[in-house]
Length: 244
Ligand SMILES: [Ca+2]
Ligand SMILES: [Ca+2]
Image 1 (cartoon, helix red, strand yellow):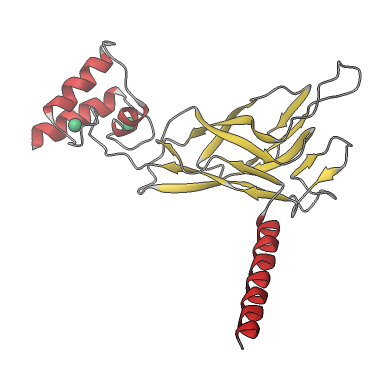
Image 2 (tube, rainbow, N blue to C red):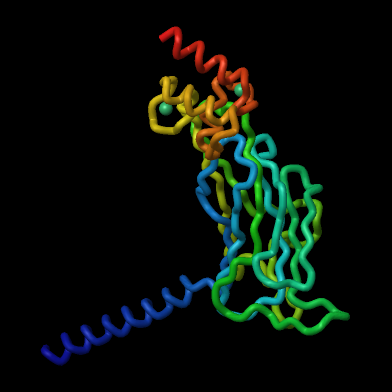
């Protein structure tokens, strides 16, 4: 009886171990590529950076990606490599998108070895945020996209032997920008809109005695016409304060 119970216990533990080992194997992803998530931004901000990051268990010699976003909210102003590539091109012609092609090594150049296993920031995408009043906070996605017109996957890594690494071996995680709705009239960004302190702060900016942070600049668009920190905004701010 005791032997039987011992045998069943050992069998159960053996199955548990086997299941555990397999589940770890299945959960492991060899290549994972992602874009920065919930990057905080303000309307009108002209250089918000999103990073393209790769975690890998084996070497990688390059990548191709096609990233899409809402062109009414975001405009790409630049794409830069964050590590060394001998070829790094980007194309803004896809509507509301950017295609990036990068290779560590190209022929007719000195040899540049593949990126070793580990984590690397591959590049950064700079975007400008619309200055229009969006009425509420908005989180807008910056996502990996597949163009149905291309006969190959648009998002893939290049292995050292020049073969491609694609989904599902490559895990892709989309990014996003969180556009914070301004507190209009709170030019000094102290949490209280339409105060004398806001008018003095605004006046000092117009006189060139101080700058405005992106948040203060967004809050200064009192007329909500998308033109921030203008004389018209200042006049309207003073009018509202005087009425109160
Ligand atoms: Ca204030
Ligand atoms: Ca304005």
